[in-house]
Image (cartoon, rainbow, N blue to C red; front, top):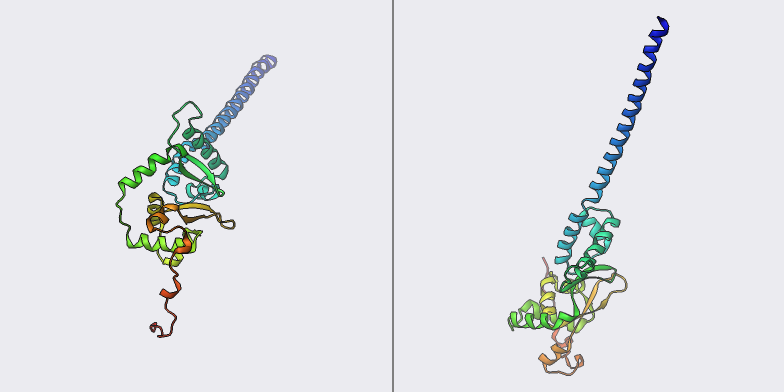
Length: 228
């Protein structure tokens, strides 16, 4: 009887052991599946990240580094790099898609949208025909700063004028009166200079023919206004 009882109990323990083992395997599978789900969730935002980066770069006036982009979207730099590479391939039509009229280009240690060179004439003609011919006072002042201080960065122009000049610089670029000349070796910021078109509008052959600005500045002989 004891033997029979033992015989009954042994299979029960074995069965229980198999169920426990099976449970552990199921738990392991669940854990693995959960881990995969976590990984998928971690990789899933790649599409939202790409769209967020696309939106940010669309309004950026200066090249944006991977670090600044990562901070903007709250994602790891490696994920942002992968998303940027995906955007580059997408706009280039590398995967059989449509090649866009613009490209995402790395310039001066950062990324920024640019019109593809083959479309420059079309864009230039559009901008020149869509914009009114008369420049605003703000645009004229900014153009004067660039003409006399070139090459000069956008931040330096803003410091001299004590106002934000982003929209004005975009206007002058669209008119073809200024152009991006280089990048600052220390900050990586884009520098601007005037174009031949400005010389044509002014009726001069070179910037050396610009009037001296020093006679127009106060020398302080008549004193200065008191500052409260």
